[in-house]
Structures are given as C-alpha cells and as structure tokens.
Length: 383
Image (cartoon, one colour):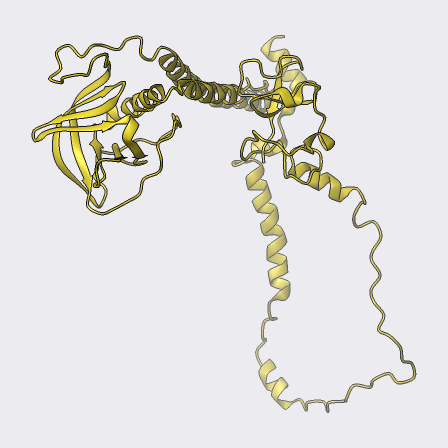
C-alpha cells in the first residue's frame, strides 16, 4: 500500500505519525530490556560454567612466597589486599553457600568500627585463605570457620575462626571483591564436599531468569490512534483538564456568595426571628426505621473475582499460595493437592513448586527437567 493510500485509509497523517512514534518508543524499550536481560543471563551462565569447572585450573602455587601443605592447590591470588580487624566484639552468621550476582556496586570505604592493621598478598587455596603481610602471615582455615560476612556496601569480608578471638578479614579493591567472594564460596563448598549445592542454586537462578525474558512488543497501527493523541500530554492532559472542569464549579458552589455594597447594613437592621423549639412526634412510637440496602450495588460473584485477582489466578486455598510473587515453596503443605491440580508424580519432585503448561502443579522447579512430562514450565507458585 502506498503512502497516499495509507493516509486515505486512516483518515489523516497524524495517525501515521502517532503509530511511527509509538513503534519507535516500544522498540527502544524492548531493546533496552533485552540488553539488560542478556547481560544478566551471560553473567549467570558464566558463573555456572566457572562453578562446574572449579578446581580444574588450580595451580601448585609456583612463584608464590607461600609454603603449601602436601597436595594443597591454589585457586586465586591478589597482591593488593589489606588486613582489617573489628574494634568491638561481634558474632557473624555461619558460613553458607549462597550466591548473589545482583549485589550493588561496592565502594572502597571502611565502615565504622573497622581498622586496617596490615597489607599484603591474599591467596585462596582448597584448604584455607591466607594473607602474607608485613607482620607475618594470617590464616583462616575452612575447617575452623565459625562465621563469615560480606559487607553489602564495601569490599570487606569478615571471618571468625575457632582459634582466634578477634574478628578479622580482608579489604580488597572494589573491582576484585565479586570474584573473590564467589571463589571463596566455591572453595569452602569444595572443602565440605557441597559444590553440587552451589550448582543447583545457579541452575535455579538461571531457570527463574529464563521466565523474565522480555517479549517483542506488538506493532502499533494508525487505526489505534486516539483523538487525545493530538493534545500535548495525551490522555494525562485530558484527564487533568476534566478534573479541573469538575472541581472548579464545585469549589465555587461551596464558597460564600459575594457581599454587595450595603448588604451588611441590611443584615444589621433585620430583626432575627424567634427560635421555635422543634416539635417531636408523639402520635406514633416504635423502633427507628433502618435504611434498606439498595439492590444491584454489588454482584454476588464480585468478591470471589476480586479475591481471585489478588491471587493472580490461583485457586482459593488456606496456605496463601498464589502466582503473584513472594518466596518459593520447597515443602508445600500436605493438603496442597486438595486445592490445586497435582500431577501423578507430584511428590517425587525435589525442587520448588511450579505450575506446568498443562495446568498441573509440579515439584521440579529449578531443575533441568522441570515439567518435562507436563508440556513444560508455565510459572512459579509463591507464598
């Protein structure tokens, strides 16, 4: 169709311009969202590959001024590390295997109560974290760790061990903190033979991220343009103008009438009427009549629809399970299949609760074979 024919079919050229602007805006938003999604997807898959290959590229520590134990291997080393200590006593959380690729940008600052006491070369092995500093050597053996905490805003990691009272740790360059924390998590998991838990966690993050991939936007056509598009600001401007048009007459109606010259004199010269007491009805007594409810104000099915919308389509249940968001469910209530449609192999799953494309629930969330026998994954069930 030629440009002239298109303009003739749509009625005017402003509709064509509106459709072009809308498509350009939608495509820009889609490209930005797609780039952000791809960056996170690449990072998650890079971490998954690094965790799967962890230990294969370990070295024997050749060239490092560190005497290793027999069979000890080196995973990571950094020369620009600082030794920090806490001025006060604190109890750190127990070491865990959590991986958080969404941490905010870290700033090279030192929180209150933390002092720098030395600096040197930090080395991560399969048995310990070592700092070779000017005053000697500081070791944190994985088998003796009782507490571990990463500062959420600064590149500081604090560690508590059994054979040392004072809490100490490392202050690293901000750009090296993420790699150090991930490597320390993998080294600790390898030492306690739990690297599979880290891999399962990364698989779960990748599966959840796959559900968030942005969809390509629909194409806007000139026929979809509204007359409000001709007004600067569009529907918002029209809505504001309508609100002003309704509010101004209401304000004028509620305001006091203007006082004309001489009206104050007339009011002063008028004799006030004598107050007449109200006459109470005595001829008829009885209970006060109550207002009858108006018919048609609410449909009997309106409340269930609202409740269903609040659960994002999930059936009513006493557990608070829905499809909206919250926390994943790894141990659902034993009565869950009384309210949801569960598959035959439901209780054989070892993941978190999801809904498959055929409408049944499954406990295979976060696994590579999620909903494999039920047409694939649809969405996660939350609590």
